Image 1: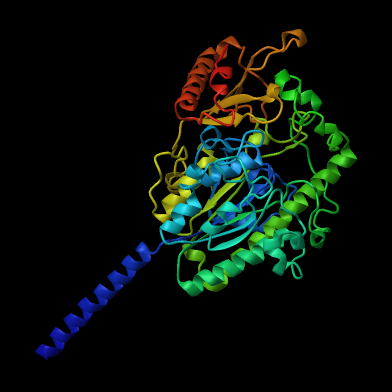
Image 2 (image 1 turned 90 degrees about the horizontal axis):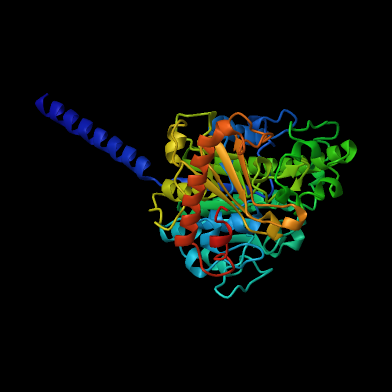
Length: 493
């Protein structure tokens, strides 16, 4: 009897020890990460972001299982620069990368999240529109992603703007027969990558950079019936009248004429444009659903972080504008959803300020990789755990692409947005202009309060944040690709 008791005690301790080890292994097991990134998707394109007309069942699933960031912005609202920002965790004036300026340098790429994750033992995959070239001599135009291919275990990227026709993207050709539209093909490629990673028993990070809903408006015909009879509403800031109060400089780029040339000015063509735009997003939603189903089948859904966002927003007629680039809400603000299945917080919304560079830091933080000191991004894990947490007190939006008149620097805090337009043409009556918007109480930016005396305290505060941001540009910005001139041009006059 004595020996039986001793044996029981030994076995009990052994079982407890085994359970402890298993719990520790589970805790130490690195999570998988999937980053879905669309192109030109405005924040107002999902039910959870306030649109009652759209159908996004799989994005709704993500929203119901994660944290929705209601004030997420791209620190440059155009694809090339934004993608370089997201890959490197740095603001544009530190990447030196944008149309009209130049390529991303090899130094900046060396601390990108795909490179650092691979060094940390992750399998790293990519599919879709890479969007920028990597070169110290500004080479590689229209061959975007070629230099980076070697840094991925799986590469399904294509150069330049890519094509909605799967067969026209060399890396995707094998999926063309079953998935002729590239949006669904990227879902299929992601599934293959996941299965390969399972075979190799390695944690993985898959980045899916969709072309959709970028123009040309060529949605997958499989979904032609989805929005056949839907009539889309218009935002409160729709139309030319809602843009009369904005700075003259904001009307001097391609965004202003595109309100008419892209058909947003007439109801019939507006509805047709919105149907195609949202049908493209529906295709993305379907592709995401393909991947979610695979995670479930593979038993990986409980240890896979999912991040969803877009490279910039879109003016579907807001303020009488079309396209993107400008720092107003519809141009720079996008959806962001982070799903960590290990967290208790579900279907939570946060108004904590966040930017595209923060996605980079968050990915590394989830993977247990040290965030480089050079990064401007901050990890959002604390916000996922506590939606009331603020990890940054300000964020810039850089706009130095296109006509000089539209170049500006913007800074935001938890409530206000301050825009400084430096350009002047006295003959045309165009002078340097300040704009200040109370995003909390005026989310559609219908009133510029910069000249109202009762808001002088807020204006002075935002000016100071602006000056701090410009000083950061001066001290840390690259001194090539034309960025140094803004150190003086953007000084407030």
